[in-house]
Length: 116
Image 1: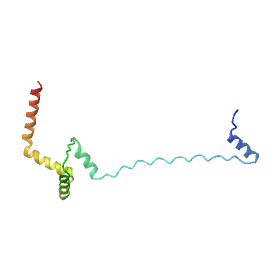
Image 2: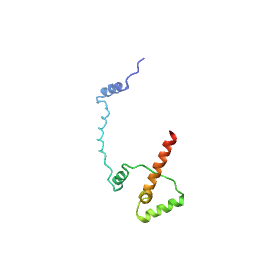
Image 3: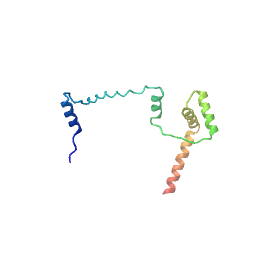
Image 4: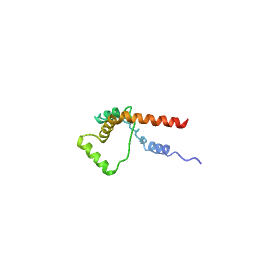
């Protein structure tokens, strides 16, 4: 048995009463999607990108007390911790760089010789 179409039946009843059947209003057209608003440029965003370009991440663990001391030193100097540590590494490289590079080269050569 076929189910009666209730909408057709409602239209018949409305016609018998001399009225137009109620039709649902068409759904409103969706508002155009807002164009994406670019994030406001901050000084940190471009600097972070350029300061990391062509560089490799180097991280290490320190004792909590050392971390607090480094953090406070960076605040005192008006620097980020990363910049303070970069300066420390730069200074170390200036003092020991040539010797450190030579030591690494010697270790690599020993490893190559041992693997032959």
